[in-house]
Length: 416
Image (tube, rainbow, N blue to C red; front, side):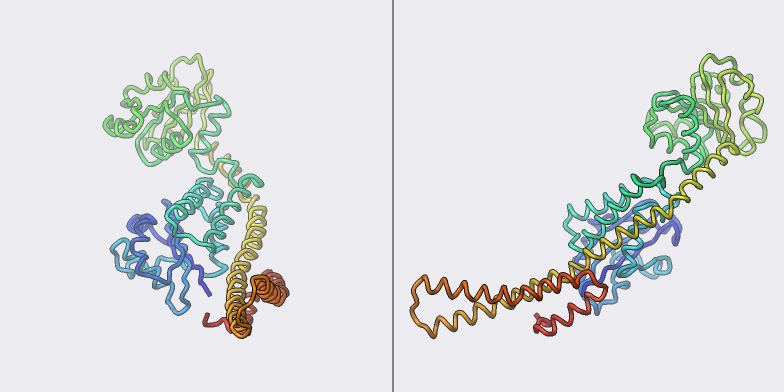
C-alpha cells in the first residue's frame, strides 16, 4: 500500500540560516526525484518559516525518511547529516493532522496568521501545474485548503491584529480611517522600523517616508518605492507633512516633543515603539495629537491574542470534521483500485470463456453472438454487484486496508 509522508523543517525545529540553505523550488526537487521511482506524488510547501516535502511512496520496502532526506540534500548539494537532526517526519494519518493544522494557522509563528493559507494553495497549484501530485495528495491538500477557508470564515482566529506593528496600524485606522494614501513617517532604520515598513507595505501603503540618523540608510529603505527620506535634523518638517508617525529609535532621551511637532490643524497619530520612549508624554496635551506607546499597544495585542486563543477550540473542531471527511476519501481511494482490479480480472476470465465457448460452437450468427456476449456480461455484473457494494461500505471503516488485502487474496489479485 502507498505510504504518505511529510518531511520538513520549520521555525519550531531549525534556525533561519539552515532554512535558507534548504530553500528550493518544486522544479528543483522534481529534477532530482526522477531517479527515485518509488516517489509517485510530491508537493513542496516552502515559506520563510517552513520547508516541507509531502510525498507518496509506493514501495513499502524503501526507507522513506532516508529517501526524502537524500532528495532534499541532493537538490541543495548538501550532506543529509548537516540537517537530519532538525527535521520532523510525519507518516500516514499524522500527515493530515499536521497539514490541516498548518493551513488553519495553528502552527504559525503568529497564531492564526492568514498568509499560510495562500502559501498552501500556491504549493498545491504549483504541483498541479507540474503534474507531481496525484489522488492522495490531491485529496489531502484540497482538505487543507478547505479547512483554512472555513477557519477564516467561521471563526475569529485571524480577525484581530497579532503583532505590535499590526496593532499600531489598526489603532491608527480607527482614528484616521483609510490610511493607504495618508502620508506616513517611520523614524529609525533598525529592525523594529523595518518590520513597521513591511507591515505598512503589505497593507498597500504607498506614501511612506523614513527619517534616520544615517540618511544613507533611510534612502536605502525607501528605494523600493521611491519614498522620501530625511535626516533626524529634518524631523519637524517630516512630521509636519505626516498624518501617522511610527518611531523606533534607540535613544535615552525623547526625540520628539511639543516643539518638534509644532502647531497642528489636522489629526496626527504618534506610535512610539521605542524603549526608552522616543516621544515626550506631554505631547498628549497638544490638540489633534494622539500618542500610543508600547504599553498601550501591548494591552491591545494581549487582548487580540486572547481572542485568537479563545477561537482555537472552534478551529480544532473544524479540523476534526475535515479530517474525518478526508479519511473517508482516502479509504475510498483504497477501495477503488481493488474494485477496478476485480472487474478487470473478471472481464479477462469472461472473454477467455466466451472465446472457448465460441470455438466449440463453431460458426454462429450475429444475433447468437450478441446474446452470448450479453449473457456473459450480465453474469459478471450480477456476481460482482454485491461484493462491490460491500467493499464501498467497508471503505468507511478503519480496517479497510486489512479488508482490502483479504479480498485481494481471495480473488487472487495479490500479484496482479
